[in-house]
Length: 258
Image (cartoon, rainbow, N blue to C red; front, side):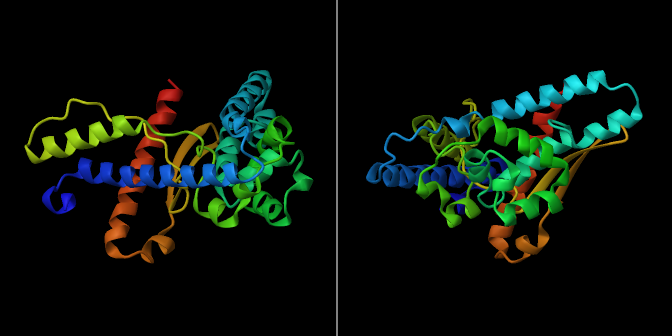
């Protein structure tokens, strides 16, 4: 009913994000229930939480090597080294596919990956090989609960944030004020709360940061074959979501490099 009354791009975008939040919270609850019923009630999710720290460490390794490079030949060799801009970007996309994140956290070397994962890494993301290997050395060797290895779970969702809940009270307050003020044509003074979701970001679009010949390119690659299969209403929501992802990644990259 709300959608029929309100024709506001910001509200439409908020409703898309709110839907993702609801899915995340339901998924979070279901996984916690599964863990509680098994032998993994005291499961420690810290391996998922340190991935970003290890990625940052890898970037520092790259910058140290970059500062030591003496000529163009050495600079070219660094493009596929641990922590390079292209390597880290490709590694993140590799981790989001299928159950690759789970495998990287459990295994300690590339040979232990499934043949499918190795093929995807070497053929689709070759520039990420050294960075993925670094992540496995630093985070691998963990034993994860079986419920986190479900194929459908990993194919449809990113599971690294499952143990992090949203501030639902704040989300509800913001939603209520936004809808009421929009209907009454008033300004919403509350800032949008930080949202935790589990949507796979590369399901309908791949955002690539590419470094070549001293230039950095930001590439948004829409997966139009998948988008075209959706019904028209959902297509619009997906495209709006993709546009928001592009905007967020641009702002994140620019603010992180100033």
